[in-house]
Image (cartoon, rainbow, N blue to C red):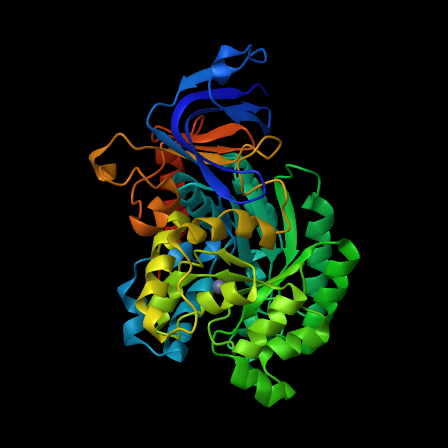
Length: 460
Ligand SMILES: [Zn+2]
């Protein structure tokens, strides 16, 4: 695959490993899957054969966003008045939503994944992690396989979280019996998808993360065996933590969630938790010490009305923080660029109640890029520098929307918020979205097929 030379970019967010800086009036050259050079007047030198030269005047070029938590399958329950968080208790909400989830078919998982990933790409996301924990028995086991198929069709880098639930409702979980798996079933299928898809080579497009859904909905052995498998196969671990379950875990196991997971070894630099909004300072300090990361999903905090995640405390303690959209059951969009803005605004809302200052807006761009990459264990993505993967997106700032904002590209996404799609998104050196189209794909057809799959599970 030949490369591209984007000439005269108004700004490029460069990070050589020492922090993000803005390079003005610069060019960026890609070669195959990687960035070859960033600098001024690169076009004056001879280009590798086959290089496509583009005028990028007015463009702000950002590192591709890394989404660290999502549930693609929930994309098929968006914008429903009957699932309004503000009118339902969590139990009522679960009682309405699980009957829908339990009817999902393998095709529904494919098309909802395609829908979510398409929206992510349009808004600058180049690497997506998905936490797929919904396994209705009739849908079979080939759900992650279909997700990899959808990711490949769109060209997005995909980290599949193979989730699952083992504890029945009769023993205190919230999961209908038709969506349960035994620990053996879950672990065996995790091993299957790791063996079939996990690739840890540089510029890998496919990785697998062992991701039991949450401690309240699984037997202890499910987590113990997850740790054993992940360490044996050298893959990462993920689960939900600190979203209101700690008192339940304490009643069952005599300790709160963070201690319970640490005691089983479900912690460390190869482990990241979603949410963590109810954690104590001592628990955050333990996570900082073990190197365990946090995927912060700001949008569900607004919806659920829970305690606001203490990002300033995490930053002060050195806890690694990435950003996530979360699933559409608690965030009706798959727009990580929007989360950079909403995440920053959320912290500002409660700044006066915090011990530590709100991190600067530019840090929220770092959470969505280089720190998100760190949570996934990737050293080859998340920042723009020679030798890194050519994962990036561009915004043409020659629009009224950007008048008065162009002096600070690092803070633009967090402070101003960008509603529209990118002008171009590139993954591994390949343009996957440009000028309102997915090159080589028929969006209208993909949309119609997704709607047809969705219509099969709509509540009567
Ligand atoms: Zn979640």
